[in-house]
Amino acid sequence: MFKHNKLAAVALVALMASQGSVFAADAADPVVAKVGASEIHQSDIDMAISGLDPQVAQLPEEQKRAAALSAVIDMQLLAAGANKEGLQNDEAFKRRVSFLANRELHNAFFKKHVVEAIKPEDVKARYDKEIAAITPPEEVKASHILVKTEDEAKAIIKELDAGKDFAALAKEKSTDPNKDGGGDLGYFTKDRMVPEFSEAAFALEKGKYTETPVKTQFGFHVIRLDDRRTQAAPALEQVEPQVKQLVMRDKYLELLAAAKKDAGVEIIDPALKKAYDDANKEPAAN
Image (cartoon, rainbow, N blue to C red; front, side):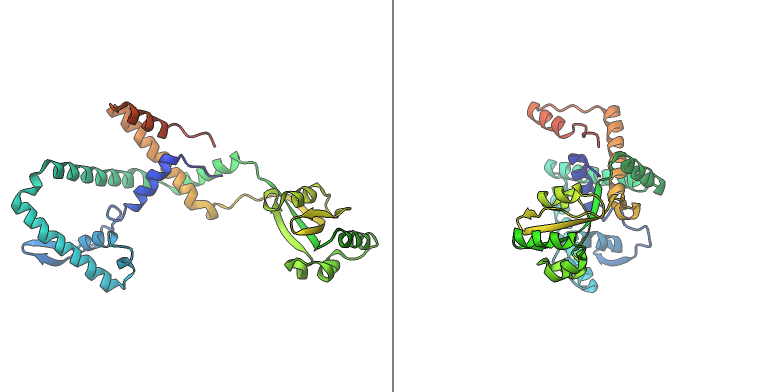
């Protein structure tokens, strides 16, 4: 139902994974420690926690905060040493800082113009569009009696022809674990059962049972069709996270398209250009 452009989906996952610092609450940000004259704020601890090793992140809250504070103190101590040595003027370091700054600006822009820009009516409109675009599959409700041999199945069909109750026969003779429920399988779509079973069940009229045994890898079945209906579409509440990601993807791609148009993008390396163009092809229509 809900399909993503592959590259856009990967980009969104990366964005969501790196939103910890960008989405931090704008609450009071007290100073919790100092390294010389340099202050360490609660926000520094929060950012450090988001970067902790997964095993450390499972520690109790105070231990986790202590580990994060330790990491921030260590970072500031050695950063001060690096500044004294002039490492901040290294060209490779400057390029990395520029890259990291751009990544954070990218995330901040994403937060403002995508995450915070999404309204409930946007999600509802996309949900309605997706639902309108699909053809709900047919599903049936069936019961069955499973036995080991064809002769047993034929004998059961004769008993049904004589007026015996299907559910009672299922409880008495079926080898399937659901026999205590009269062989009731509930509702299912055609792809949920093995082909031989589905073909026989979907070919029946409501209230009818198979006149000949149906052989599958499990044995021989006598199948009765109890009901037929169109499968209900999932409620918005069930798929809201997926729909919201679609809206986010679309807004993100719109932002990128506008930015590319304004700035112009030129890829010099031919092989890299081809790979980039292939990865950014328009997704197939849903």
